[in-house]
Image 1 (tube, helix red, strand yellow):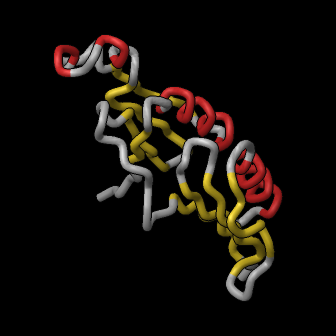
Image 2: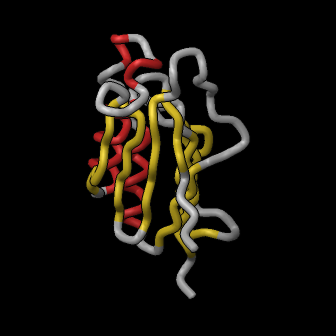
Length: 136
């Protein structure tokens, strides 16, 4: 079994996944627009180029997402996409990259449980937590 986050966007899924691919050094491996799907007739013509589904692969993790159909987008609440690392340099790089244009709610810093931990909401409205474990 594999659990993967599935993110919804307000029409900016393609831009978000390009951004995440750069930040996380991953690769967008799949993208289907509404216009290229059987749902083309169920969305306005200006949504035909929006993503009905996208997949980003980063190491052994899969991140998926879509543009919520018109009128169905809801801002994320009560969740964070959590990234666990054991390298301080990589943790700082990813945190800084995701924070660009977003809002930091807790700076990346040492905590009683982690060498570094930080929280942010990125420029697309997605909440993230970066946790860099203390050496064993």
